[in-house]
Amino acid sequence: MAWASTPVYVDETQRSIVPPADAERLADRVDGHSPATYIAVVPATALSDQPGDDNDARGAAFLDAVAEAGGPDGVYLVVFGGAATYGSSNGVSAPVTEALATAVERNTRSQQVAILDDALTELGVSGAPEDSGGAGWVLPLVIAVVVVAVAAGGLLWWQRRRAGDGSEGPAMYRPSFDVLDDEADSLAERQELAREDVTRFGEELDAADIAVADPAVAADVQAAMDAYAEAGAAVDDEPDDHMLRAIRSTVEYGRWRLASARARLAGRPLPARRADCFFDQRHGVSVTDWMYSPPGGRAREIPVCAACRDRLAGAAR
Image 1 (tube, rainbow, N blue to C red):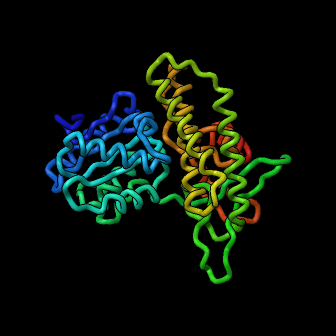
Image 2 (tube, helix red, strand yellow; image 1 turned 120 degrees about the vertical axis):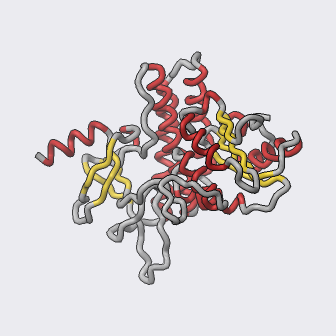
Image 3 (cartoon, rainbow, N blue to C red; image 1 turned 135 degrees about the horizontal axis):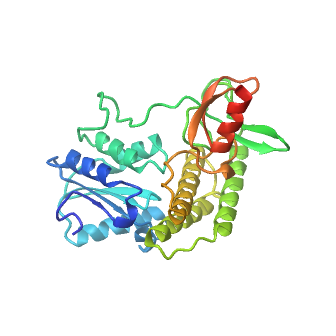
């Protein structure tokens, strides 16, 4: 069993997803907890190799195989290359599915450490980072949200429609930020933006042409391809806001893994797990946040790439 010496196992190819320091901290957090809790971070191929018609079925098959192999009683949380996270309980009663659903809703797909921490908090495991007795939020609440596409030399705001009675909930394609009250759009428009973004991501993968002799680079590329396949399979389904946010999170994660592969090949530090550039996802992973006011809108903090940061800084001088 991978958990013979520690309750947290991280495959050596997945240490960019859950770094050793975080793995050690998570192990300390679950050590001695009842019921016993086990965490594994494995390549995305460990999910795709399982039988089943979709990732939910394949995740269940993987966890069933763990139980059948003699896994000890307890709670299991498994991260598959950052592409998906599943959990189950073996021989104990625990609301694992509900805890993971809450944690995934609070974080983007690239924030796997935060997802694990939040899930543990929902399961009653103490020791969350910056624990203040709350619901397990790991990252500060970000003020902002709208996605901007550059078209015809101008900015097209991706907005949310506000129902007159306030009954329509947050519905942004982009999942990483809160919605401000100066935003409005339709579900069909958000689905079209999602479809265009998935198509662009596929084109980026085709154009990348990255050598995969290095196992770490190969793992990054495989994870990016898995993310594209998952998003592509979902984007033409009957849309709802939860599904569109999940697709956006999947594409964002895939772009980060592609950027990580490029960084490894170039001998550069791995990029931070951040949102894509607010102004155009094709600019890549953002490098910082910037206060920005859209025409006629309220100021909000947005993630920007290096080029857009320099452009905004020049305009502010």
